[in-house]
Amino acid sequence: MKNFLNFLLEANKLKTIPRTGWVLMKVKNPETIAGHTFRMVVTAWLLAQKKNLNIKRVIKIALSHDLCEVYAGDMTPFAYYLHLPKNKTKREKILMKWIRLSKKEKNKMGKRKYEIERKSLLKLIKFLKPKLKKEIFSSWLDYERGISKEGKFVKQVDRIETLIQALEYFGTKKEVGGTSWWEGTEEIVDDSLLLKFLNTIQKKFYGRRIKSSKEQKELENVLNFLLEINKLKRMSRKIWQLLGVKNPETVAGHIFTLILMAWIFGQEQPKLNLKKLLKMALCHELCAVCTGDLTPYDRILSKNKKENKKIFKKWLRLSKKEKEKIFLLDYKKEKAALQKLASKLNPPLRKEIIQLWLEYRNHNTLESRFLNQLNALSVLLQALIYQKKDKNFSADFLWEWAFEKCEDPIILEFIEELKKKFY
Amino acid sequence: MSTEKKIYLTKKGLEKIKKEYQDLKNLKLAKSKGDFSEVLHSEDVNPEYLSFQEDLNFLEARLFEIKDILKNVELIKLPSKEKRNIVNLGAQVTLEESDGGINEFLIVGSLEANPNEGKISSESPVGKALLEHRIGDEVIITSPIKVIYRIKKIKYQSL
Image 1: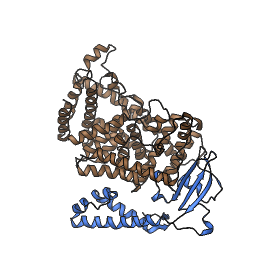
Image 2: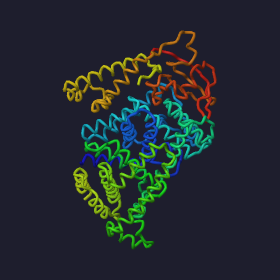
Image 3: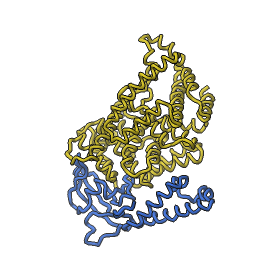
Image 4: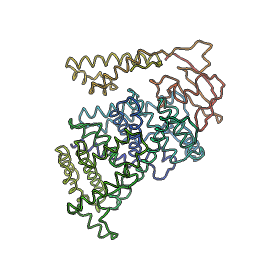
């Protein structure tokens, strides 16, 4: 358990590391590596289900692809230029285009990047159990080398997710965003479905005319869905905002942690359907796109900050009737939001997303009961990280919540580990 | 289901995939004999096979995939001398921009592509845009934002 905890604490750093490309391009409050990973996992899932690919593997590869960046940092291809010029104009000129290097230089720098990232990942997973260590390493390696169909697919999805984000940040004007993202994407994408998806992106952002078909319409709806859920990369978790945390984790960051926990804890539970658990973790907070991030405190907080401080000293004290009332109100609101968000996706996918969320909220399956416990654990872990950084912050009230929710022996064992680590 | 589409590989790529096929078959055999853990912990095991070691279904799927590749493979050969000024599979293409910027790609099949190392797929939009062009041609590489290059050099060598 100590090894799980250390791994999660290190991986958690990805929620605070901004992606280098956006920093270089001077984007204000850019997405983090965790935020990118969140939407990339969703993108990979939604598109992979249209192909004959192993979805569990796709999700694992997408989830692990940037884990190495905990220590290696986000090495964009611009890192291939050992020294970017200090002169602002010259520097910007380089950044506006994709890398221009000889094959020999690309080969040399690519291998260097690979080696740095490999060592970084091995450092991160060093103390995990051999089976999990192998699983994470092989997923990353598959992404890097494109060993399986799934690895090749995810690698291309990674670039597409970045392209969409670039278009969201810079729009379509060459003068603002350059050609870099398109060039980089068009060098790598050769999958037939993903090439069609690039056309969909062109239609959406550039008004390109393309022949209408059922498949094209479906891809358009997937793109619109992805654009909607991007809001979660910027949406701060409300509970931390209420508690005055500066630069708190986002909803996307929280989902990233939860899906990572679902993977490492879930594979210890042979009775659980891991693929379902991973997907459920991805879906559990998507409704926040429409409802905002809801907390159990929303209906009882007052405008008086001092009063609220008292409330946060303890977990909620409510009657069963009041709890039921709050649950139902939130449940209805979230269900309607998710139905609206997923309404345009193709029926099987829409049904699956809604079904996963319903199970999660109703605690009526093995996976949903386990994920609810993991969710409480992830919130407690984040609170303890904030508490360690800021002595005025107290995670005490969340212990109560965790003890109300958790019953699984592995999770309880992990909670004991948290006590040892933080107290 | 079997793919009918031709799969292009360099000689080295083909050797690598044949070796992987043999190694994975050995892994499968070792697993059926029960001495799998010895193979697993052997230092000789290629890390690229790690994912197939734990999951027999995935190992089977990969073996099936490689069989399909081997069935449809076509070796990337050096073109005849008169065709070496035309971009095709196996060509290393040097491109020049109007501001003097130089970029370079090796055109390979989808399986061997790795743009991080300068190897791009002939089926990617950039690869497709370059195919069939000659030295001196002007090529528009990307859409919807155009990037114009002039083909400066085309080089073929045994791969």
